[in-house]
Image 1 (tube, rainbow, N blue to C red):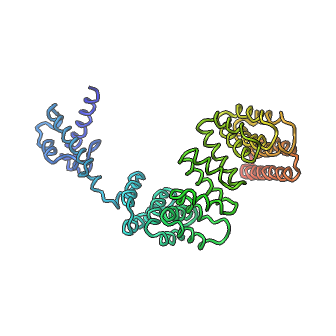
Image 2 (tube, rainbow, N blue to C red):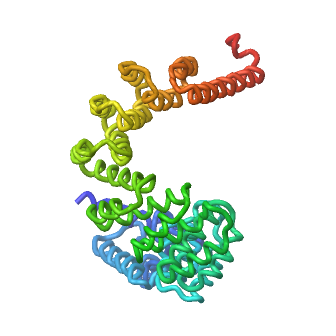
Image 3 (tube, one colour):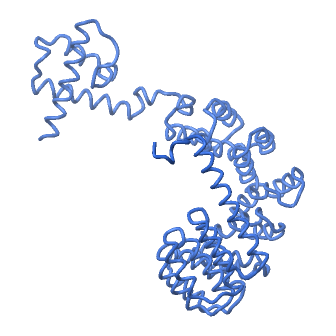
Length: 417
């Protein structure tokens, strides 16, 4: 009943404001109400010709509410103002949802004409990250129709947009013609760490996972192969845990296979931490166990660092424990450096403690450089110790220079003025 009263009151106010505007020759929008054009002309005539515009009977209000409902429904059905907006107008809208919907509508089944239209409108959008989704959509669609022309255009972009655009074009191209996409990537980059293979493998993994895996393993060690391996394992995991395990089992031994098992361990831990812990504990000591255990430890530490530290403490001394300790430290030291330091103090010094201690030093160096330097001096490996101490001293030096500059700008600050 209250809702009905509020609606009647709102419409009464709107119509009264409109009448006042008509009486005084005002044009434009009705204050607190819908634009006059949304009401049928006969309704407006009723308002103008009413004997007593300030008083509305129940019948009058019901009629006007029906007219307003009809007007709203007409807009929803595609006959109103918003629905009459052209596709290009919606693609240039400041509303990101409206804009993306319009781009998707135009590029759902891309042609050379639709891509040309999207390109023209995209280039008129404000530059910056706000148009990144439109760029991805445009370049992926363009990659389906004319990938070479798309890549030629992308080459003129800068930085992040160039990387995103080329990856998106090559993603689309590799799904349809992987050999041509691979050939283009090889022809257009000199060097070992070819960034174009990220997009190629992303698309190829969608159409032929095992061919994508072969291409990924053929890449040289580096960041591109790491990103490509992550793409391959994500696709395999979406196909099922069994597929991911089978793929990892058949990878060449070494860093790629270790990474793959680490990815699987992380994904299992996110779904069922207890099962992940049991899986790792049943592994024989190996590089695979090292990779899997550190990922499980990291996920556990994010949920409960104290419980994760207890699990790691019970591990046999070795690489698996050392790497897992390092992951726990990275997480725990951000939350409670004192508790983390007390935990580390429980273990005798040795080279297997160097990595966890290094992680601790790097996490606390900015907040407590003197304590960090003391911990750095406990690192056993001389080369590592010298490197970490140098890092801490640089942090201290930069902090002191910043403080000096601040004091120079505010010389009276220390005096409390």
